[in-house]
Image (cartoon, rainbow, N blue to C red):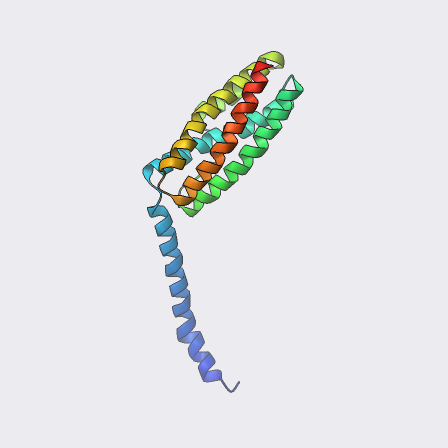
Length: 179
């Protein structure tokens, strides 16, 4: 038994449980605050762009494997890489905000991906470019809107940063479509 055993016993019995409770309450308040700053519009944004992003990763991987022209294959690699990183960041922000993040494509995007898988050669390249241009235009507008008017500060910053990536991808896709 140490000289400070009564003090240590008091710490273990009274202070540490209170400290654990205080930390727990602080974390609960942080999670509640994060959820409070995530509006229904923010949640709809997360749901929409998470699906678009997963589609872009999968379609990019498909283009890397099935693309006819090397430029399409290369753009597919870029697409899959960039949107995987974007998706991971969005998933983290959604988790912090208490928003469920989907882990699979919805039926609409899955059908679109399956349709791409069925193509080859020049037909694949053309369909891939068309699909990518459409999804980037749609998601680009969503990112711009969220960056301007979202209620969750982390989500707004993410949307602004990601919008720049989407704009870059749109430029790449247009250049490929013109060639």
